[in-house]
Image (cartoon, rainbow, N blue to C red; front, side, top):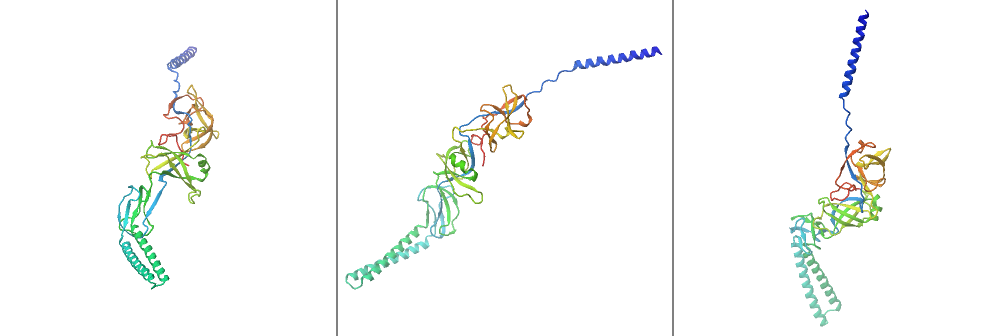
Length: 369
């Protein structure tokens, strides 16, 4: 019995020793886990621009002088001599109506004038012989003057059969065709001067004080990213549109070139005066912390720290900062919700400075009001 117990105790000790050796060998084979790699993060450098835009609107390129052309008499159109988009000169004939009726009227009044002239001359001869009274002669003179006026009117009516351009410009809209009978004053086509180009926009009533205070503008074309021109707020309607509650405004384009065409879509940026520029960041960089906006600022050691900022206003795609960061500091602009204080990152820089997302014209980002 004692030998059996001793054997069992010896066996148990051997098993425990074997387990300890195996555990030791297993621990020796383990390796320490490598440190987590720095996360690549998209960043940009905050920067200032002199002339930061504050208001941006879309509009249409129009001419300051647009004329609706119409015949001054009714008639049937017999010829249209120009097409839409034609460049015309002052005095050029654009269309004609049937001249038959006006020709007959002119012939009739001419005959009446000849008769009145003959009667007047006969009565003058009779008055010299004292065969008729002075009152009878005055009546004939009045009849002659009336006949002359009627003849002049008929001749003018004959000239009205030709629709002429009263100024050089571009034919925009044609609303009547050959064979159509038009009334006097009915619009046949529209003529726009090509040397007085401007952009027609609509301004919300809440923005009126800012627009009047700024005035200076920059005009760019949607169709051509390289086309950018200086502009000036020329006029603002004093009455709001009853439906949209916006005010119609015109921004004149200074020194437009051949790339600016009537009817194009344009963007108008009203610029902040020099010396009052503000910092802007993309909306994707804003992180809400305890109900307040904040930015992830990148330190020199590639770690990030959350810093509260003050936002002056929000636009489409950008936020205007009133304080919290300085120009030249680097901030995270994507993936802000996946970071924590002290995280180390691998900086990936965007190509452009962080004044705002690039627009079609290569200028700072914009907001539509």
